[in-house]
Length: 451
Image (cartoon, rainbow, N blue to C red; front, side):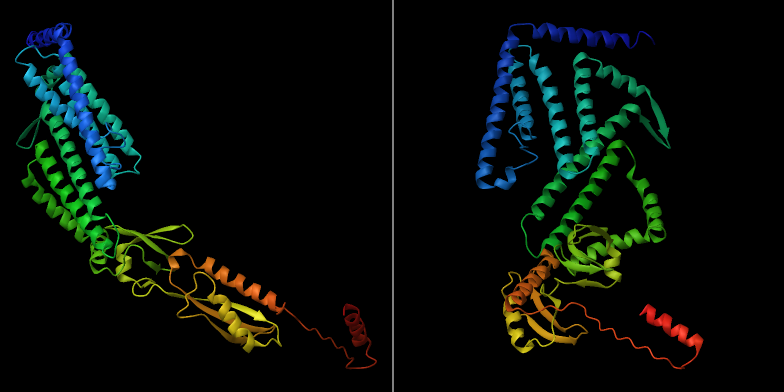
């Protein structure tokens, strides 16, 4: 048994020595020239296609998975180069012994795998920190596989993995089968993510009132493609899909008991997107938290307040509790501010001046216009309530109220109208109830002294 693996090892070492000897021949210069030509042609094709897309569809060429940030940074360049190198290898094989292309084809194939994985994961999860770790792991594994294949060690490793076998029920799984199945599963999931990201980008492109419906369609497409990709990946690993019926029953029981809240949130999310009762961009108030809806996910909704804070609201709460929507039918919002003027001010003459002053503020609506009411006779002055409307509450309410207050202050200063300070009138009186009483007289003297 010790001599059995020696033969393939020597054969592989001889093959590697033959490859090095072939690379040292002058014919390799011809292959290098052909390979350089393939790479240049691939670069020219990518550059031409990118220039065409920049003219016809600029958004499709910017940051695309196919093109990347530079001409050779995307997936398209190694794919075209690999196709051209494979054709050139087939052509050269009839005349000379192709050694350069034997190295170039697996290298380009590994580059395609790395580019597809890295670009798809980066586009699908742009803000995830673990994506960089996965990208580097895929790159190292791909280049390590190329090196092992070139030196002839990879076939030996695969044969050794075939000998490591374990039984799962009636199935016989080897280490090589598990490894190949895992790689196939990863590729299938990456392709599923790629297709779903492309479809989602097309569905969400542009703006309009149907953004929520397109968001729901994008979520459904991604979920369906990931489910199909997961089933194909499990099949590639060698798992019998008929065994999933038992797992499906267990998941159903779990949803009925422990996961009912999560299931309710997912169902509520699709109901919200389908009914369009809440849409991305609406200004809502939920449980004393007011803000603008920035995203509706399948499980939760993100509400961003005007102060910059974000609240993650479960979708079930949006269905079962009261939600105030300031943008559902009419985006107009009524605001008010209060000002006091001194007693004796001609309020009837001041009211139209205040109305005209507030009307000139930029965001205040002309129709319905502002109004001024004498709302109260306060202790220090006459209290005037100024009401006005705005149509863009998502741009803030405190800032427009401040502009209205500043405009009112300028008007009152220009007219010489006093804004009264708090005033209090104090009166004191002390009388002796009983004359001649020492105790009371002493108390009255103390009170006089204190006064």
